[in-house]
Length: 181
Image (tube, rainbow, N blue to C red):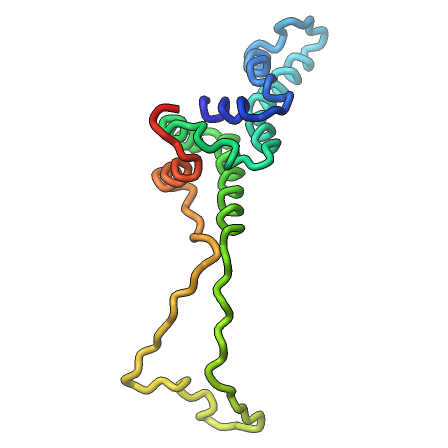
């Protein structure tokens, strides 16, 4: 869980210190307390499990600029391990989705729209036209080819978050991961 631990280490949220106690309480809820009702045991256990699973989400969300603050913090091994765990754990997958929402927002913020093209000519439309040929061929003859200009999209189309290799590559790029960290 090194990926999540590095998020906790970067955050200043007081809840970051609950990870270790919650990992104990989710396995042995009666540690340090006297349980007087059976239901309290299960409440403590389940609350500790939820806290353990979602503390990284909370800490990530407290970062003002999470992508920039976490840049250089992760190794490639951290990222590979994190992405591999998203297939088994829904809470880990949710954290991945939260991170990618920030990645896409940042990329969209950096985008500048292309200039609006000037119209080539003014069309004269006969509102009273009627008949079989009103739709025409849009000005393309049989030997003319339709040319479509490529449009610059504001953000590269989202990668398939189910494609582990693409996700790993993008996270390595975004966080400037190296072998060491």
